[in-house]
Length: 181
Image 1: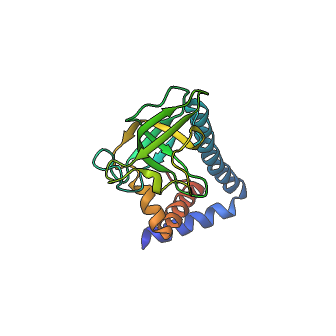
Image 2: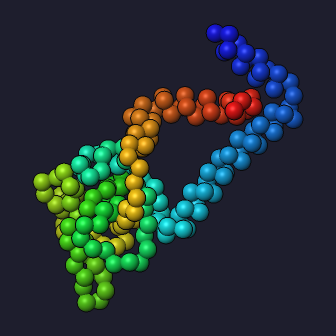
Image 3: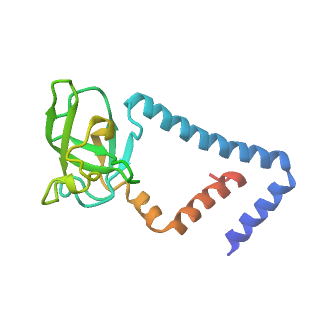
């Protein structure tokens, strides 16, 4: 309780000094914009619209677990069966992380891809859009290059418990504004 009172007093002192308050708000803005610039830099470097994704389901177990973070690239290298890719079907909000099962290259250079989760019994045709038998390169967000096990569980918890997201972001913002590290 004492530390809470101390934080309230520090915030009151900061509110009495508007220049310091403005400096702390600008520091918070710098942190947010630095993170955004880092993300955009990763997008340009990896050629992927989403260079980092979290595995949200158990469909890729035992190779990839729920909560693993994947690092993606989308270079113009040919796709081959066995590659772990992330794709997004039109009309669905959440991307899917699955393995390439078959790659059919057509004479005109386009490819038709069939995917399947390692832990699933059947291929992904049931997940694709109505009457769609294969996915194309335009639906692919990236190919997995590396992963960090279980680090993404924080993201899953923040999505499962929205109040936790507000508590975490609010407390981080508060500590930046009052100048605590």
